[in-house]
Amino acid sequence: MADAQYSLVVSMLTAGGLLGALSASYFNDHYGRRLTLFGTSILLGLGSAIMTLAASAQVLMLGRFIAGVGSGIVTVVVPAYIAECVPKASRGFFGSLNQLAIVIGILVSQVIGMQWSTLASWRWILGMGVLLAAAQLILLPFCVDSPRHLASQPGGWSRAKASLLRLRGPPIEKVEEEISLWRREWAAETDSDRDSVEETPASSASHRVVEVSHVQKVNIWKFLTGPQYRRPLCILLLLQLAQQLSGINAVIFYSTSIMSAVVPESSSVITVYISVVNLVMTLVSAYLMDRAGRRTLFLWSTALMAFMSGLLGWSMQHGFDRLSAVAIIGFVAAFAIGLGPIPFLMIPEIVGTSAASTAGSIALASNMISNFTVGAGFLGLASLIGQGQVFYLFASMLVVLWLIALRILPETKGRSADEVVQSGWAIHSPDYQLLSRHDEP
Image (tube, rainbow, N blue to C red; front, side, top):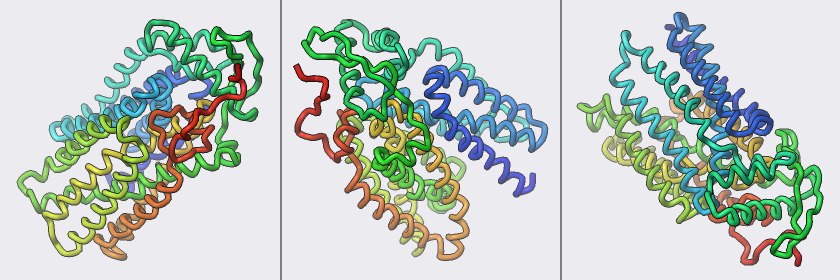
């Protein structure tokens, strides 16, 4: 296969992913999280099957494109689905498990690839995608629909209560209390974020409860142009650009060549070693996410990555291979504790349920575009200004993004998305409790 054709085959996954990202909000909001995941399982299984059986480069491209569409949609759906199903106090931990699953998948695929990357066995690697898609189709019926998504649908409160009861278990009073909290939070949103409101009789707590019959979904155009979404748009762009402009893919690209000079006898398993570091630090991140908080981990992660990137550039420039290896390991470790999981974990924490899917679509699209830009321009820039100097540039961008994050990135630990929105995306939770105008005795 010619290099140009090979590049096109590789890029088809990204092209499909971009289409999937832009269409995810439609499917997510119209069909719900669980049903959309059923659809992505079919796309991923079909794409993997086509790639496995491909007899030409064109068929391989088609398979990668279809699998890319499924990957793009699932990347948007899963963070929102997790955030809407788990208790607020555990949202960071469970959100980090999504990143952990991705890291484990990468590690397993690398180990399998070491054994099956031969002319006789390479199709078996692609065939694993069919098995994983089938496993997801078998397991999804045991999952509940997102309670918050159900509650946002017309007449969906009773179904939301049943779904939440399956997740939380008895007593039902705790479930009803959580449902009532959603009602009060959504009632406090602006009129543009809901269709209609009708009052119901007073609750047992002597409060008037507002029944939101339908939460209006926010489309991409409204999210991009609406003044009320300007701040969350800036925050999610900050998160996604920081992840890709950090140069993580460039560091991974160079890891094999740099560490081969340090441990030449183990050059074939260097990427596996890097993935093990990523896995271990992602576990650390899952432990810290609901303790240290998202903002704290993001700032520490970005700062450490900027330092390691500068150290990598300097060591490459002066030929210190061992120091370069240390910088690479430190860079990947710093990425795993913050910039790896946080950009997608925080999306459903900075926007309400009505805008979560759309925000996820915009975030993934910007992530993939910036990823493509860095990937396409990295080698040319490295040849122009030097390999070491490129990492100085990555370090500089991380410093700039760290300063922006210091001013605008809110801490979402222990806060619902509605609390974050009602606070005006304040960096820290106000020292008073925000009350809905409908909550007076």
